[in-house]
Image (tube, rainbow, N blue to C red; front, side):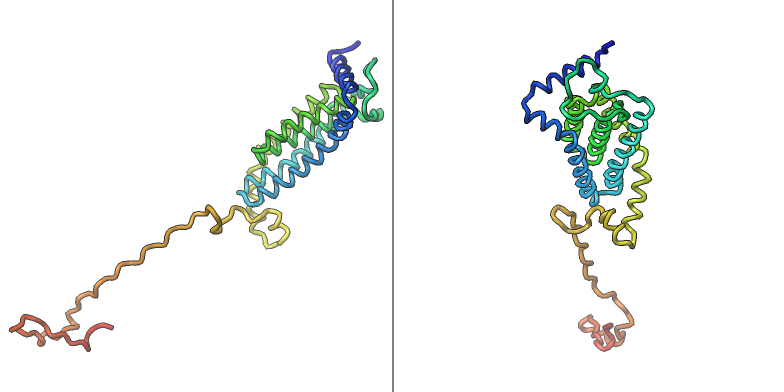
Length: 251
């Protein structure tokens, strides 16, 4: 008996066959190219965070690690649920645009979608400004898996949500302890470790750096009067002055 997701799968694959050949090839490439682009963004996010505070670097390091954890979790789900691929199970469906994975390479959830959802949220946490790029990338990558005919719609939706949730929770829980480790690494005497952790926030006098004003010099004080430096016998009554003995002045 057909389900709603079967009907939606057929509709999407029929739409895919009606698109131009160049668009079909683009969708095929995007299912794999998206993974590569996310990997490059992970590296860039880590490099940017090396000069940030320890928490920023901790999030940038945790993002790819948590994505790997989400991928492992999706593989475990696959081994338990054993859902057949739609390109093999849905009756009346058109031939997929790519080769249908072999029996035993189960469908639920989509590994690509799990990685995409995890990477999108991990990068958004490490580099908030690119969330407008990473989230649409993840959605398009998940959709492309249905478009080429190798996943049900519910496979990719669950994969996106599962990956995003795993990364969000792991980053929230592990940021503080990893930040402590990062701070210790920055004080390490091992060159590679110190290079990986980065120098931290700049304390130089670059553009925009705050340079404190120099402290004012203390005002000159007149020498204190020292009676011992004067000879009382030098008092001159007619002029009402004291003749100073320069040899007794402090030097």
